[in-house]
Image (cartoon, rainbow, N blue to C red; front, side, top):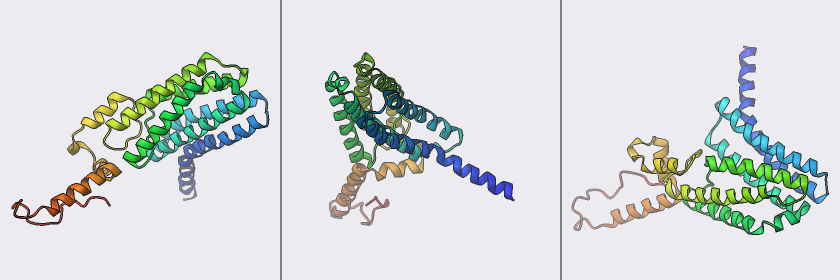
Length: 252
């Protein structure tokens, strides 16, 4: 009995480890800003970036291994990445401002596209996207290496320019995928995968996917307007209408 309870408790704790790793990565962001403002050793700042990068890699690995790789975990992981690298940009500005001055156009483009993508995702899905595409993974690795090098050397380097260029491409890909997919999905690996989701017949979707599709703000608004027009149609104009109650209850 005690062994069974112990195993259940151990499983419960394991399930929360990926959440804790992502939360720790987000918490490292403000600490990185504080370290840059207080002129900590550049090696310590670079070490924090490496630590955050390793947690980003292994939280997904552990979540998949333990069967806790849920959409919530993936979304929280994406939010933690965004928080950390926004903090890293501010920390880099405080510690190595000349590095960002050499790349301000690309940095501005990344921030602008990131904001546009968040606004579009919230308008369409009611929450941020979490695609974890191959391009996004490449961008994350390039950013980790470039920011680590920038803190360590204190000089502008081609790696940062390359990483910011990948950021522009990644955000454009994310915007395109959000425009293509009809429902919120996590772990969409590229544009071709997004197109396959779009072309999937609605009858082949799971009940949960059909409900998610009908619950997105834009689709829900469209369905409510369609239902209102249908109910307001006079019976004389449409004799086939026998009841005014729709067969489907659309989300409010």
